[in-house]
Length: 494
Ligand code: GLN
Image (cartoon, rainbow, N blue to C red; front, side, top):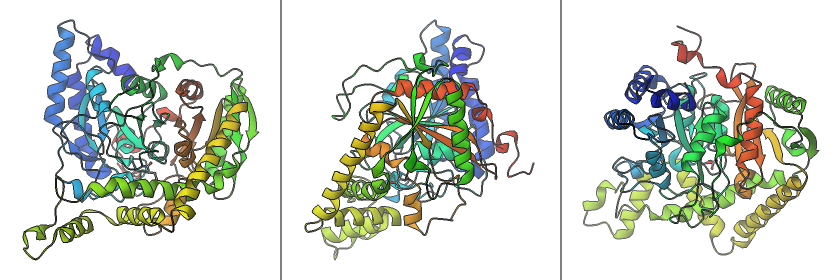
């Protein structure tokens, strides 16, 4: 069941939160050995929270808008007293000293925390294969990756191991795994959701958002987490609307733009067909569709892979083994200087992809290269933002594929970082421009793997985004399909 169904049943006592939570852990035990979506699980804590919600309801109290519903949190977001590892060795023993704002808001909304989900180390990746704790698998085909970096969150939603999940998106990490796993992923506008308590990757791009079974659940989760927070200086002081009010099936006269640059070389034919069919359906519902141009699209990957690593190299300078996290085992050696301890700690604690990003970033920011790389990338970023400003002068929503292909096989691209980076082509621009974006299921390829439809909107217009997504969803059943794994079958076998 979805959260919007469960909340009602728990509130009117048709079901208890404890029953729901226990059944979720039963599912986790059945499939987790295959999916590997979790870094840590918190069954005892979850059951305790669920009982508290149940007794609040029994006493006539308000259980909150997510009252009693299980939520899985990406393991780069703090939950007091539990480990936040970022799927890295360097934070393997780090226990969150405080709740992220999102965590606190979810608590206030009555959510039940069931554990922390796997990610690419420090959210750097597109496949959840760079995790120190091993790769997560795609529930639709266990030989395939679930996407990334919020691969654990998306896979767990698809496999029924949670009802709701939270992800983070710096260059596509909510939308791309949602697309690969056949679920809904929403990246809010930069500034809409507080990042206080999210471990920083690239601070000018990072956003937290929902990964859910349908758009109604995404709206519900947004109601719980959106809003201004004085602890995050980039959060914007605007009132957050009631997003569930956007769940109306009506796209009449909504102007839709199709950017021609997103339908070129490298786009898989099955993905293109599913996306074009979706656009036709939305047009048939009364929306006005036209072509638009985002001419600087071809520079987006290059600009992102300078800006994001530059910010990462600065943000990750804090992991030195002194105050918290992993410290080299040789630190008792009297021959080691402080610099040796830093170097060994970082050398042993970070994985290969994280080191690659730190080197790329440190290089781009170094004197003599700063103007040629970092500054130029920032100028390109401005041009990309201007492309969107112009396009949004003519249309309300831009529709694109979320990714150029469907999920690929585990190991297929892990030794070719450039191929991996190029896959982010359709998602990265929304982060560079600060725009909200959603990926919703819109079909399957010839191999039975899910295809995602990406919708982008003007800053702070998540409402139109949800309205168009909901209208499409109401006329299709893609979001209702379930991987065989959920019926006890795996890759075709019982
Ligand atoms: N795949 C992109 C990267 O590797 C985006 C990751 C993200 O959004 N966290 O940087």
